[in-house]
Amino acid sequence: MTPKPVFHFAFGPRNYRLMWLGLALLAVGFITMMFGDKENYGEDFVGITLGPLLLIAGFGVEFAAIMVRDQTLAVPTSAPLAAPNFTAETVAAANAPVAAPAYKRL
Image (cartoon, rainbow, N blue to C red; front, side, top):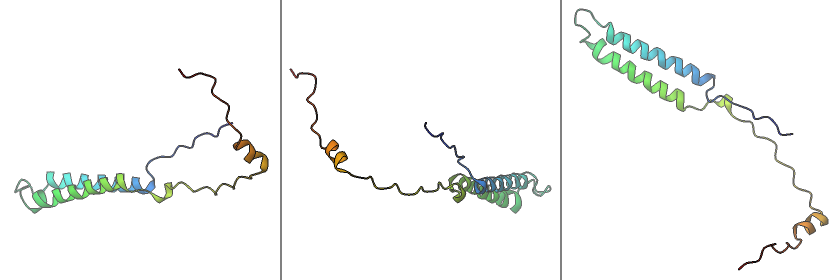
């Protein structure tokens, strides 16, 4: 009987929190570029400088959300396997002569 494979998600809770933070920064960046100062049509510090900086920060956080490994997903190491019990019979069976091949070389 073979054990069932255990499936793990690639992202953990930390990755999802970073992803939501990145999405929020992206949304704020786009909103600041869209609704900057109405009288200058977005051609001031908020629309030209702050919005793109927020977008760069948002994409950076999204990149980190993908690349960071969450420690809660670490696979626990199993106990070391016991050393094999070598007896005279097992050693003799391992060193037994190998039978000649059943075919003939031409």
